[in-house]
Image (spheres, helix red, strand yellow):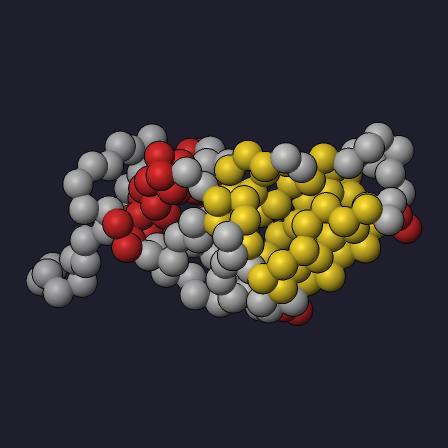
Length: 157
């Protein structure tokens, strides 16, 4: 579901010195630019539920404690065109209110404006899931969207 929503609505990337990271309600996406011609044998990537570590050609790109918890055995990485590493992590908490403010604790933080945009996007993704007959991909939202937005579950249908 989120893949189709993201294809229509785009992503909110957080730029970093090595590339960027973004998120949906379910996943964290990391893109790392590496020197052209990098081979898979030159990449060492350790993905844990709370930790991540990436080395390319013997140089540490990043290492640390993740902002949130992920499903360790569902994390993957790929090397594309010998110049881009894509890492996908599956969040354990898949609620719209679980908006990561940084990739690692205290590192690669989204500024206040970007964090606001990420939370809006996750709230719209939640609305899309709750109302599959509507298209929220181009919607704008204002007001109470922090923590995943207002809870309409108690309203009668």
